[in-house]
Image: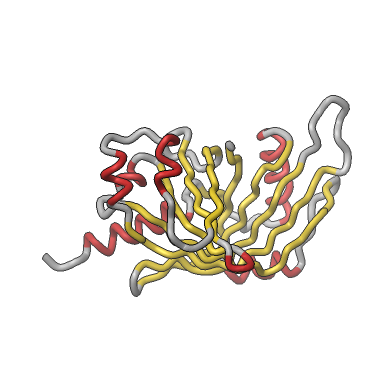
Length: 217
């Protein structure tokens, strides 16, 4: 599937306050809320980050009830995180099955690269998700629905970490223009939100690379 989303960064205290007193713009209503779901994800790549360099992110996430899910996200345009191809596969344990994704990317020496995948970093966040929709839908249009994900936690590479405090708006139904308008409406209430084009994967792999660059020769 094609994932379309917008990402906003904030200070952790601001995001917590926003979440505790969140108000939707006029004309939108919440249809479902899930509070404080622990998302524990491990991202994989080769030592040289061959997949990251090709715009591909691979992760395994621990799900509720002891299940796992592996995900591949592929950038459709270099540097664009707002629209990406996403493929998910349910797992019975935390052992990845990357061969199942081999037909969905085009890299030279794919078999060798898959065999060279190693854990690079972890991302642990508490997520509160709010599914909301527009109250009125014009005739002939699909209803506009969006999922708001408030993520608070850390990206961890070895003994170093970076704080995560971000809001993701993922389009579930409707158009990208509607998502853009909704995002503008939300920012009128919460102007501290800073639009970002840097994904968690990019942050984690960049931290990993900076650690390697600073290792003594």
